[in-house]
Image (cartoon, rainbow, N blue to C red):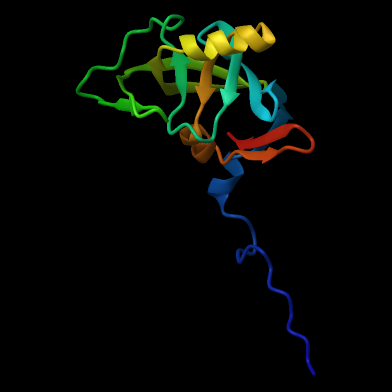
Length: 161
């Protein structure tokens, strides 16, 4: 019986030139336990000169920042309109802002759109359990756009810039 030759993972003889623009970057994340069996991944960032921690939240549809910290000019209402719902079903109006510089893992991203909402509840919870302040949530939109891979065992994430 003749064995089939294994197919290569990529059918290109050489990778297409557009893939050479993207590089995988891996960096550490901190996994914190707020309460028994309640874990969050924390990523240090800098957004337009403001340094702080963001929660990597794959369950959040969009990435958000604390509206009390980011007073950038909102995008005009004709650009984008959005309302937000939480798991409790509450609907909130959302102000969209564009961060000129977003630094993460030693890399800088430019012109990142973020939703600005009140994160008072999140910060009360983090202050109570960990005495820390959270400036935002990195949502699923960010994870999809930058093809984020989470390695829980090594406490790292990999992404494509």
